Amino acid sequence: MITALLQTRLPEPVTPDEAREMFRRTAPKYQDKDGLIRKYYLLSEDRHSVGGVYLWESREKAERVYTDEWREYVKATFGDYPSLTYFDTPVVVDNLTGEIIE
Image 1: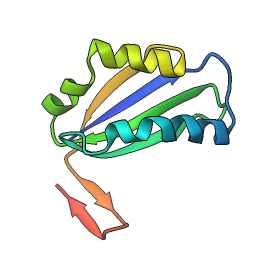
Image 2: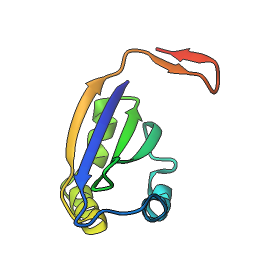
Image 3: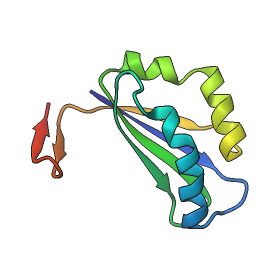
């Protein structure tokens, strides 16, 4: 598994309610995405940045999503191009299901 961390700067700070509404509009785009296990939406404490933490089955499947078209979509939606960092994710502790996933 790999984790992808996305971050992008907003042109103006947003409230948590505004961020939640932006995230709700984009969430259906990620449902049933091939290889995506889980996605978390993020809002920075200063409200000037948003991001996402994506847990993928493989980097190959993640890279099928993170295309130039996707980068343009993020810019159009949030106001700036995203930064993207990959991390190997050998173990995940899931306290909701009680699982340790390898």
